[in-house]
Every structure is written in structure tokens, then in C-alpha cells.
Amino acid sequence: MHHRPRRHFESVTGMPPLQTPLDDYVAAIRSSFEPFVATHHSVTGHVITINGDHAAAHAHVHAEHWVPGEVAAGGKPFG
Image (tube, rainbow, N blue to C red; front, side, top):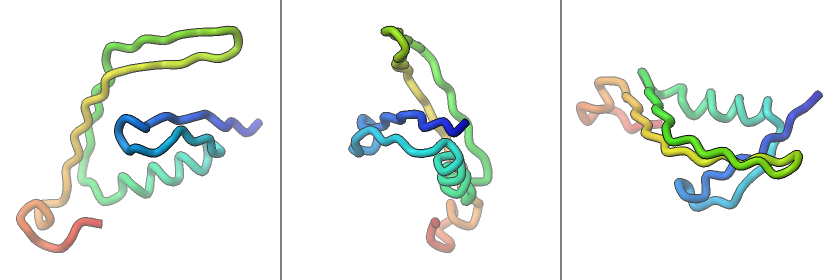
């Protein structure tokens, strides 16, 4: 079974909601986090609305991303 979850990050990225195969999404996330030494994400204040067989979730996210020391010190460009 191939899941195609709908992701809505318009408030962060300005992009409209998108729906892609879950495997493709996971691969994209992995590659985008690869440059970081560490990350920490705190997700709080969850509000979930269920309407029949559809659900929507709203939450507050605080994310921290650490780059390698040479980047933070003004070294090679990030990415």
C-alpha cells in the first residue's frame, strides 16, 4: 500500500499544500537534513479535527538546526 499524505507548510514556505508518495517525501527530508550536525524539533499544542474519514492537525513547531563548526565560523558555504 502506497500512502500519499498531504502536507501543508504554506505558513512556513509559502508553497501550497502538496501530496506525494510517502517514500519520495522521506527521501527528500533525509537529503535536506544531511548537511546538519544535529537537529531538534519540539511540537506542541496539537489540535486535531476529525471530519468523517479526513483529519487535520495544527501544532506549534520550534526547530533548531546545527551546522558544522566550519560553516558557523564563516567557512565554506552551506549546502
